[in-house]
Length: 590
Image (cartoon, rainbow, N blue to C red; front, side, top):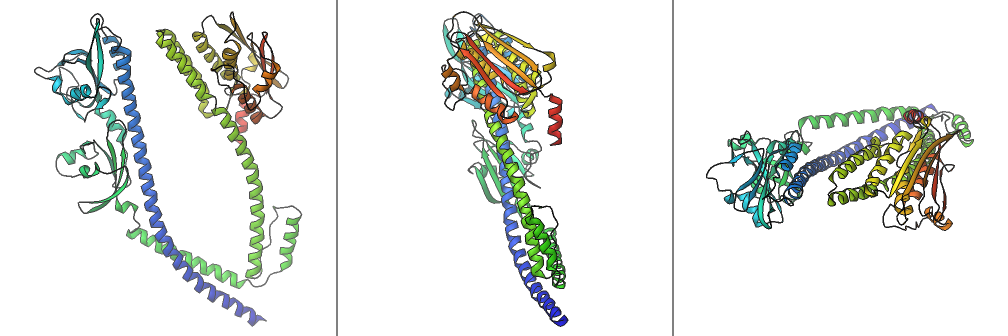
């Protein structure tokens, strides 16, 4: 019997070892090829993502500059009568707000005469502005904004910035002098360092770099520009200007390189990433030695495991049977006995893995349920913010169009406070104090829009201020009260908010003296097809808030509506009276 056992162990050891060695070699070769390919793909994807990110940064910067140009034109130049008023103060204000990125702002007539310049400067003598490329481009294509290549500022004298590197934005503008209008050119000189800052520290791996070229292939930014200018280094920028967006391979001065190209909108510029081929290759000596070492280690471990398995031939099956019996009774945490021959060990491991998988699946079901609940909650919450932003911006635009600049400033300030609380560092739970401050900012904005249309009052017990509230539950209800409850009513509307605590419950009421609703209309607010009676407002506010409250706090909480036609509406919010600190502590523990 002993000889038979030894023979089995010997046979298992020999055949398994030979098979493991052969399989290990094949797997290692296949893994090496796949790893080489995957490393190249990963590096290329990362480089492309990096270049795309830089392109987005450049485009964002250019959009900011173009918005500044629009502000200069539409806010200062277009509506000003230059024959009787100066726009220097308006241009100076915009310059002061952007002087970290802007060197000069100048306005010229079609004939090249300078109308305004901030900071104050004089044109160089005998300089024909109309012959400048940026000037001609602006008048040739009046509908576009034009960006120049980087250059030394040379058109002004007695200016501390005259020797600074800049790139210019120019555009055609309409100048008004009395009853006549003529074309002119607005020039904004942008600091080259502000563009250069976007590329600082950006590399595409060891030995890689990123540079920027114009539509004609001229280099606008290069981390080694001084070496290129001195002739000690060359760059394949002319060829790169003909590359389409994407990844290309090239051989330049004997070096294999991977080129990643991304075009920048508005300008025709291209961002070019250069990655040496060695970065994506596994053919270095260190890498090969590491792979050989890992193969040897894996094979050595396989031999040890084979020796151990082949030495364990017999073990009582009864212990495994007992373990299975305990598992059948529902105790999935019990230890499974693993011993005996290879077949018994394999069976024991299979049963053990099965128990682990059952536990994992049970945990996954709970996790999936919680994730689905959170996803539904986040989806509902995300429906509110974009719509309110649109409405508020519409209010501000209306104020500006009606030349209510001071009111617009107040509205923007209130909007800033509003979104400071709306963001709440990504949290869905805030204090009652913050939620009331949030809706107070909203009411302030709407009250400026609808003067003498309604008044509002907020009453809250001090003991309620540090209790927990969901973010953005009051603003949709107040919005409905304004747009739906008071849109067609005669006389002044009234909106009242009250916050009280009753036992373990927090009760918030939003009341108005508007047109009210029928019982059918109230029911429709909670249905899937909300009947919107006004083109304004979210149309999803009440149902959205009610579902968010129930998703977060449970079915026992939510909204109730008491309304009668021509009598007004009262919406009651029922929440648990829980302190905000206790919620934060609970979230930390979880």
